[in-house]
Amino acid sequence: MFTKSLHLQILRWLLTPLAFLVLFNAWQGYSDARLVAGTITDRTLVGSAHAIAEQIKVVDGVVEAIIPPSALEMFASAYQDRVIYRITDSDGTLLAGYSDVPEPSKPVDGLEPRYFGSSFRGQTIRAVALRQPLIGVGEHRFALVIVGQTLHAYQQMIDDLWIDEAKRQLVLVIIAAALTWFGLNRGLVPLARISDEIAQRPPDTLDLIAIERVQTELRPLVSALNQSVERVRSQIAGQRRFIADAAHQLRTPLAVLKTQISYGLGETLAGEKDRSLSAMKDGIDQMVHLTNQLLSLAKIEPGAQVLARERVDLVAVTRHVLEEVADSALAMQIGLSFDVEADEVTVQGSRAMLHELVMNIVDNAMRYGKSGGFIAVRIGVEENVAVLRVQDGGPGVPVAERERVFDRFYRILGSDAEGSGLGLSIVREIASRHGGTVVLLDAPTGPGLLVEVGLPECSA
Ligand SMILES: Nc1ncnc2c1ncn2[C@@H]1O[C@H](COP(=O)(O)OP(=O)(O)OP(=O)(O)O)[C@@H](O)[C@H]1O
Ligand SMILES: [Mg+2]
Image (cartoon, rainbow, N blue to C red; front, top):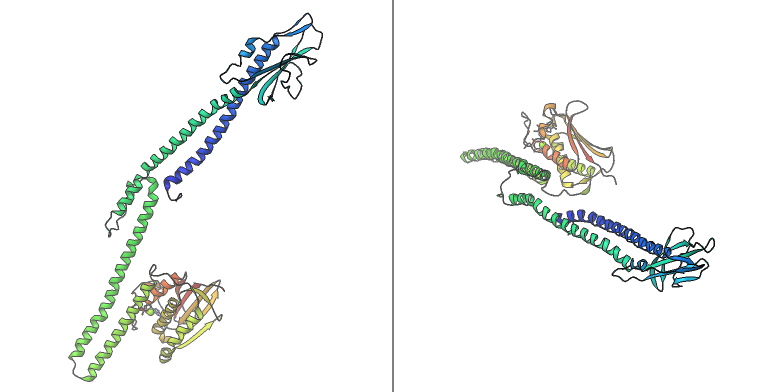
């Protein structure tokens, strides 16, 4: 469902990276906010610690620590953070504040303030420790000032800094999604227009869609559509031509038949009537043959039916054809020979169609090559191609005609043999539907035609 909608797909492509960007930004914002809030808190702490340290005095050898109110006022905020402090002498004597205020884990040396995190009576605090030298009570004496604060204000500052920003970004993403949806709806209008245009065409229209009126992105689609319309057009034109040719082919023997009937009816002599009837039978045989060839062609037309995909032994199919014609060959004094390289040569496809293919080639060899008195059939395998060769000793086909004889209804003039002119086009169609080829060659020895069919062999 998700991938079927262009809207959802584009939104997903857009929003997924955007969501990652927003998440990254939010994380970055949070880190920045922590840094800023940390800096502000630390500055307040150290400011307060300095204010306290400055008020430590030595009066008559006694250290006095007075906490100036300003040192605590610095922390005033709405969050009522607890501020704690502790001042100790260098020997550890508590001068002011709580004795349990924690110290930094590392002792403070030098005059640099030391910031640290810790906890005080169960609350997390941030604190600073500062050393203040005591002048007037001997050398190496100092007071240690520690000021700490609970973290409510700090936490609130972080939230204030980044949550609003994150919300703003979220709103931006939602607006971007809405705009994308809207833009897509507008952008897909031309596509809907083309669909409407196609849907509303009259059923018999095969006009092309005008590509100039279409957006650049849609042109490949429209041009593919137009190409398929062109293919349908040429297919329809081909079929019209074929029907016209077929009708023409049938009309001629029918006209002859009609004449023969009229002639026969007019005859009174029994012998003449018989001759008419036998001539009519020949005519009808020819029409039956033509009709069968037309049917074969209709069956193998691409798209007419799914090609059967059985394993077929070409040797067995050819032997079967030769057995079928053996009697006629004997009667016509044509010697048949059959040479095979292997007992079985398997190809994939339709047994009935392959039978038709071999039959048409052998039938031609008998009909047109009978003067040679022999037909040599060979089957071999060459580089995974099953090769069927049928050679006769007849007049052959002139080189200039070798492509044309594959055209439907094309026959070479001057041959006295009957035929419909469809045999070789059926052969080529069947070969190509099996992924194979067919060529006409000169017989290697003497006159005659060699028909060579190559079909992809399927090894066991
Ligand atoms: N072995 C051959 N020797 C000489 N000419 C041939 C041979 N095979 C085919 N031809 C020529 O090629 C033409 C076309 O052959 P094709 O098999 O297509 O049609 P056809 O034999 O006339 O009719 P159909 O096979 O439908 O009965 C034939 O008319 C014939 O002139
Ligand atoms: Mg033929």
